[in-house]
Image 1 (cartoon, rainbow, N blue to C red):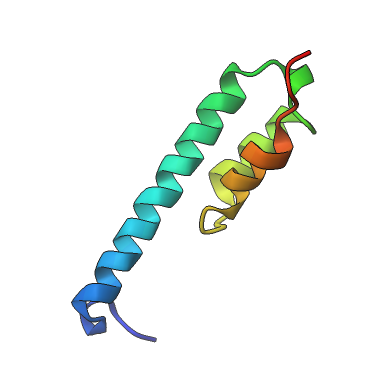
Image 2 (image 1 turned 90 degrees about the vertical axis):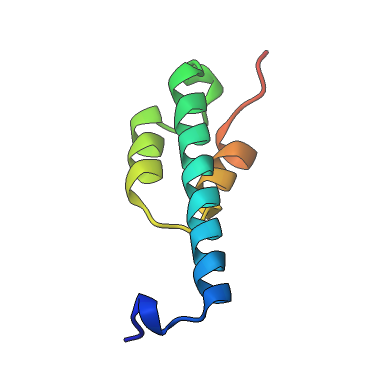
Length: 74
């Protein structure tokens, strides 16, 4: 397994940037989920919240929530 110190500077920067973007997407999705009424969410809110908080998805799960997990207000 490669350690952090074995990575070159560019790779370390890319990993840090990816982690920041993933974290921001997760926080944004969780805030939106908290504020959005249950009838505007596809699927149970607790399942979305748990998945967004626990599953490591490199930003794909929060993007999926924003694209498919929300319903348009009536």
